[in-house]
Length: 100
Image 1 (cartoon, rainbow, N blue to C red):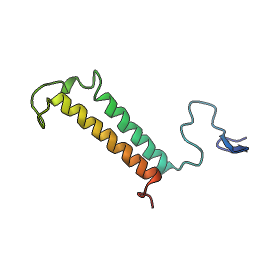
Image 2: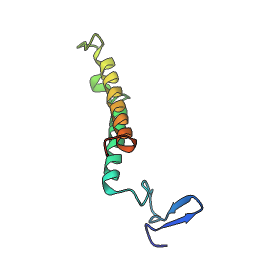
Image 3: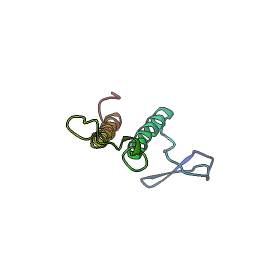
Protein backbone atom coordinates (compact mmCIF):
# COMPACT_ATOMS: atom_id res chain seq x y z
CA UNK A 1 0.00 0.00 0.00
CA UNK A 2 1.47 3.37 -1.01
CA UNK A 3 1.94 6.24 1.40
CA UNK A 4 -1.34 7.99 2.23
CA UNK A 5 -3.57 5.20 0.90
CA UNK A 6 -6.51 4.05 2.96
CA UNK A 7 -7.78 0.55 3.60
CA UNK A 8 -11.24 -0.07 4.95
CA UNK A 9 -11.86 -3.01 7.22
CA UNK A 10 -15.46 -3.15 8.39
CA UNK A 11 -16.34 0.30 9.71
CA UNK A 12 -12.83 1.37 10.66
CA UNK A 13 -10.62 3.24 8.22
CA UNK A 14 -6.91 2.62 8.49
CA UNK A 15 -4.43 5.14 7.13
CA UNK A 16 -1.04 3.99 5.97
CA UNK A 17 1.49 6.69 6.86
CA UNK A 18 5.14 7.02 6.04
CA UNK A 19 6.14 4.78 8.94
CA UNK A 20 8.16 7.54 10.58
CA UNK A 21 6.92 9.84 13.35
CA UNK A 22 3.29 10.52 14.20
CA UNK A 23 0.36 10.71 11.86
CA UNK A 24 -1.55 13.58 13.48
CA UNK A 25 -4.23 13.92 10.83
CA UNK A 26 -6.31 11.60 8.71
CA UNK A 27 -5.45 11.50 5.03
CA UNK A 28 -8.74 13.21 4.16
CA UNK A 29 -7.96 16.28 6.33
CA UNK A 30 -7.31 19.29 4.13
CA UNK A 31 -4.30 21.54 4.53
CA UNK A 32 -6.48 24.42 5.69
CA UNK A 33 -8.02 22.29 8.45
CA UNK A 34 -4.59 21.05 9.52
CA UNK A 35 -3.35 24.62 9.80
CA UNK A 36 -6.40 25.61 11.84
CA UNK A 37 -5.99 22.66 14.22
CA UNK A 38 -2.29 23.38 14.69
CA UNK A 39 -3.01 27.05 15.46
CA UNK A 40 -5.60 26.04 18.05
CA UNK A 41 -3.07 23.65 19.60
CA UNK A 42 -0.50 26.47 19.69
CA UNK A 43 -2.97 28.70 21.58
CA UNK A 44 -3.49 25.91 24.14
CA UNK A 45 0.25 25.38 24.62
CA UNK A 46 0.98 29.11 24.94
CA UNK A 47 -1.99 29.57 27.27
CA UNK A 48 -0.81 26.76 29.51
CA UNK A 49 2.78 27.93 29.54
CA UNK A 50 1.75 31.44 30.62
CA UNK A 51 -0.03 30.27 33.79
CA UNK A 52 2.51 27.77 35.15
CA UNK A 53 6.08 28.25 36.27
CA UNK A 54 8.32 29.63 34.66
CA UNK A 55 5.92 31.35 32.23
CA UNK A 56 4.05 33.22 34.95
CA UNK A 57 7.20 34.63 36.60
CA UNK A 58 7.18 37.97 34.65
CA UNK A 59 3.53 38.50 35.62
CA UNK A 60 3.86 37.42 39.26
CA UNK A 61 3.22 40.80 40.88
CA UNK A 62 0.53 41.99 43.23
CA UNK A 63 0.31 45.51 41.82
CA UNK A 64 -1.20 46.92 39.68
CA UNK A 65 -4.69 45.83 40.65
CA UNK A 66 -6.89 45.04 37.67
CA UNK A 67 -10.65 44.80 38.27
CA UNK A 68 -9.93 44.60 42.00
CA UNK A 69 -7.66 41.56 41.61
CA UNK A 70 -3.90 41.31 41.99
CA UNK A 71 -2.26 41.26 38.59
CA UNK A 72 -1.20 37.59 38.74
CA UNK A 73 -4.78 36.54 39.49
CA UNK A 74 -6.07 38.72 36.66
CA UNK A 75 -3.45 37.22 34.34
CA UNK A 76 -4.51 33.67 35.21
CA UNK A 77 -8.21 34.49 34.70
CA UNK A 78 -7.47 36.26 31.41
CA UNK A 79 -5.46 33.28 30.13
CA UNK A 80 -8.33 30.98 31.09
CA UNK A 81 -10.77 33.15 29.13
CA UNK A 82 -8.50 33.12 26.06
CA UNK A 83 -8.27 29.32 26.13
CA UNK A 84 -12.05 29.08 26.62
CA UNK A 85 -12.67 31.39 23.64
CA UNK A 86 -10.29 29.25 21.59
CA UNK A 87 -12.24 26.12 22.54
CA UNK A 88 -15.53 27.77 21.54
CA UNK A 89 -14.04 28.82 18.20
CA UNK A 90 -12.70 25.32 17.57
CA UNK A 91 -16.12 23.85 18.33
CA UNK A 92 -17.89 26.37 16.09
CA UNK A 93 -15.50 25.71 13.22
CA UNK A 94 -15.86 21.96 13.62
CA UNK A 95 -19.58 21.57 14.33
CA UNK A 96 -21.12 25.02 14.26
CA UNK A 97 -22.16 27.56 11.71
CA UNK A 98 -18.85 29.33 10.96
CA UNK A 99 -18.13 27.15 7.92
CA UNK A 100 -21.66 27.08 6.48
